[in-house]
Image 1: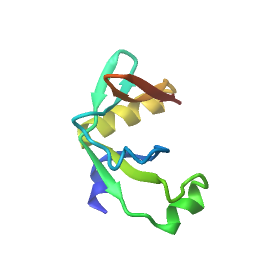
Image 2: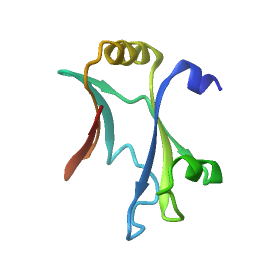
Image 3: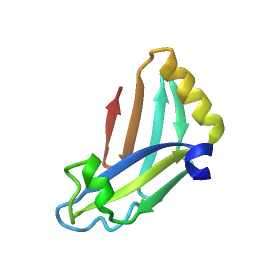
Length: 105
């Protein structure tokens, strides 16, 4: 409960068809939020156990996907929320040395 209250978090589900990607490795992958030109680094990624609850909200979750919470520190939570309240675009980026993927809202 305090994890949710004290941090800004994103739910992430990853799928890798060849099962090479067993768990998120922070030495290989980086996740951050872009607020305009400001880069806000994640503080932690927490692996989540498979639960039927997730698939009720996210129908694409299956036996081959892995689910995580991506957490940002409390000080960053306030900055991210303030940015969203102003109606500005937030970009979540997942990257490694081979490339990156991003979501904007």
